[in-house]
Image (cartoon, rainbow, N blue to C red; front, side, top):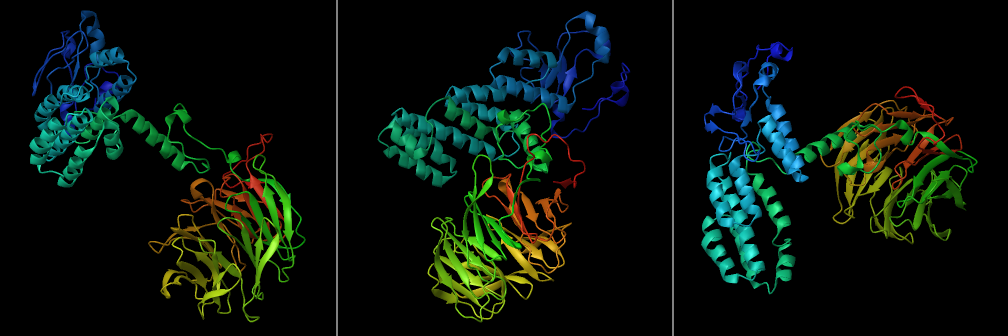
Length: 611
């Protein structure tokens, strides 16, 4: 119900009530003190006479669902009652939610007083009776209660389902108590005649063979007779009843949790694990993450390379970073688990053409290094020992510029733009080859059979090495310079020449989003997914910046400055959400993290420069 504007403005007596509030319009609060006359709680209703008892235990007994009664008992309140407005539907709902929450905390007297003073009722009296009978295990009475509740249900089929759930609990409790004959009678004489869920009845009959109570609980994955299992039963039964009759369990906590989750979802910088517990957050303030907690600040500048740095990649366990350079070396850096500082672990030398691509094996034991277009060699290093396991070259005519590991860690695929596409083992032996595919970038799908390859025809195709089939998955209008795939295999992130960064859904084969801001010409730039739950996307750019986007938003949430030439590659640590690295033609690798604790200066503007 809605109070009029006049009443809302504080004009006594100017009260009108809007009708037509839908199915729950019967949930009205009737104010028995009309026109300022004081009386005890008496009013008429289509479902009978409204009554109120003074002990607070049965306000509005015998009324229609959710009916509320407001009463006054003192003539001194006559003046104030003129200003007192009826409770709206939403106000009633809030009172019931609070009542349910307080009831769950065991504050029963407070609940009684709240219901008495507001004139509301927590739930229908038939529902209260039903709840008590279920909790006390009085199954015959609970079954009779269903007949009273039948008229209040939305679905006529609900009564059979509810009866089935009740009888199932009754049957299991008899079995647990060793009353096999009684259990058999419930199964044959009550459950089976319902002719509902016969498959489940067959399963239930099998439990007659259980030798003891522990065996029964193990096989049924049931908690056993008691408060917990009966509470769970009530939660299931409630789903068949309208909320006006019986509130869904823990409804206030559910709403608060949804509000917290929605605020987190809308938080552009949220980069920590989602904790569904309400105890982990304050409800007194809106959730907000500061940019200072986000990897927007240079923590370290690694200057050990002496030429352009073409690639960087964190290991799968997040403990190491590999960087590849035009200076013919790969450097392995160790990540300190506490400070997140990087220190040089070892240098792998001798890549005559320079290193433009790196791939860690699934267990991080091996690292494969590839070179630029004119490189026909591939190097497979044992990272713990620093030894070269394999140096592979099929032909001097080859161009091996990209590589991807099979999920089994025993095979990899490699190829280049001269039409070669190989599957090899760890010793570089050729297992399979695919002719005539000019490969720009590769990725192995989690099924262990399919390889995704971007080619010179501006597309990504899926190649199955087992049945030798291939199919189109992505078609762009411009060259795909590089791509990477999310951990769940659903999304692909493409750096497209002259276009920028595109997000594709590989399952539905649709372009999801085009991210704005980045400068992408014909340089090969590698972007990445990152952050907790891979909610973020980062890419290098030819304007010397690193761009970060929230996956759902086309505009960047941060532009990181510091590099002085093209940023070729960005890698986000898969284990530490607040750690990221970028490699640039300026010869440096920058390590990005949250703001240092000493830095109190707020950065202005959403896309402000971070240093």
